[in-house]
Amino acid sequence: MKKDDFWLLDGLSEEQRDELGDLNGLINVLESYTLPEPQRENRDRLLDSIIPYLPKSNIYRQDLKSWLRLIRSQWVMFETSFWVAGLLVLLLGFFMSFLEGREMLPLVLLVLSPLLSASGVVYVFRPETRTLNELEILTATHPVELLIARLTMVLGFNVLIAFALMLAIHLEGTQIMLGRLVLAWLGPLLTLCGLALYITLRWGVLVGVVLPLGLWGGLVMLGWREALLRSMEGMNPVSWLTLMIGSSNTVLIASVVTCLLGLGLLLLAWKTVAGESYTWNLKSRI
Image (cartoon, rainbow, N blue to C red):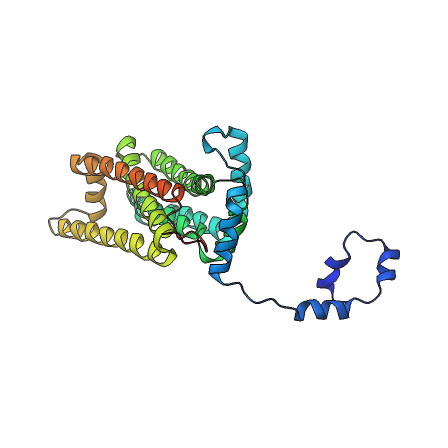
């Protein structure tokens, strides 16, 4: 028997294993025995007949321990590559600051943090998670609860990375108000995160990746183009961008507006899941 097949004998004593004898024939039969993939219509019909008998979950009565247990249960959704990518962003920020000076660190935070949050949202609803839909429906956990738990993990991880970068910015003594920096960071983060979440739930992962990241990339290019035009007037592009973040009322108002827009998109995603108008996993009820 192959080493990988010893799971068949887990929990058995040596006498019981000897009594069973060679199981290679049984293993070959099990490996050759395949069932046809059920059609979507048959699967949806079965789920629709079961759902009325399932216990209903009231997300407004969850206590803190229940939420923590739910968040911990969703930990398996995030592979090591997700956490490594976040740490690489943090290291990139410190590396760019080391090479280009302390003024670069706020820009690294503002440019990369929204990308990381949007990518994290798309990642947690990636195609590899689609086969979990039937299991999720057959539990008392409401889809909104799963949405909150996964979103909490994504945003929480981003906040930790941003906190480390902001601490470094504060220690470096960068001439920029912390309140303005937080708003300039939070607005795009919430907006891109909410946009990626809503689009992914409604139209799938591909659109959820391309549209938010493409939109943010275009905005970053326009901002950098404006900074390069300012450089023709004798001003360093990085210094001008930092000055705009720290003193421009237009940037301040835009930051507040994007915060509100991001919260609105997250609320819209909440209502989408609560109303089951989503393409989350294999279930499609749009």
